Length: 179
Ligand code: IMP
Ligand code: MG
Image (cartoon, helix red, strand yellow):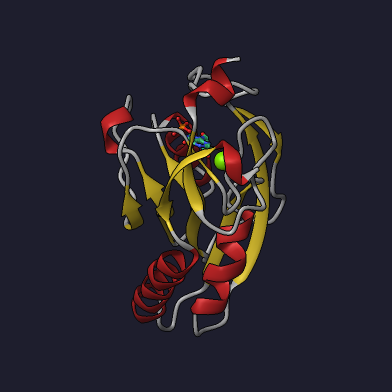
């Protein structure tokens, strides 16, 4: 698994720092609010697990499943709901927790969908952002780290459902997905 990595972008320790910092900001900003973390499976699940423990206030969590990529490395632009949440969002301060903001198709779709359900507020927290790849305008209130336009895996992120369990984030060798 590790042999397929060309370069480590964020070590385990660097991820810990980034997540701690995000948790601190969120804790400050959401004081007295009804924080509701909505996470997109499966990529962001590792991030959520750490982020929620870095948030020092009560919060609820829920999961959604969306599909946009199939098994390739580029977005198609069509996003589908595979699993929705059935709780009302009125009065909730929704924070969408995502692993990576790439073209933006996934998050802009989800943001609009959840916004229509009239939460008290809605914001985005993404661990990684690849701003060079953006196709639709969307900005996260909380961003862990901006990264260059390269396909990364680890810490929840996959290529063809593999590498999610790597404890760091690395760039995959191009020959791995060229085959
Ligand atoms: P977007 O709709 O193009 O912004 O894509 C967002 C989704 O694509 C993320 O939630 C990931 O599942 C996937 N994705 C985008 N870039 C990468 C990457 O570098 N590695 C792994 N998955 C990625
Ligand atoms: Mg994802």
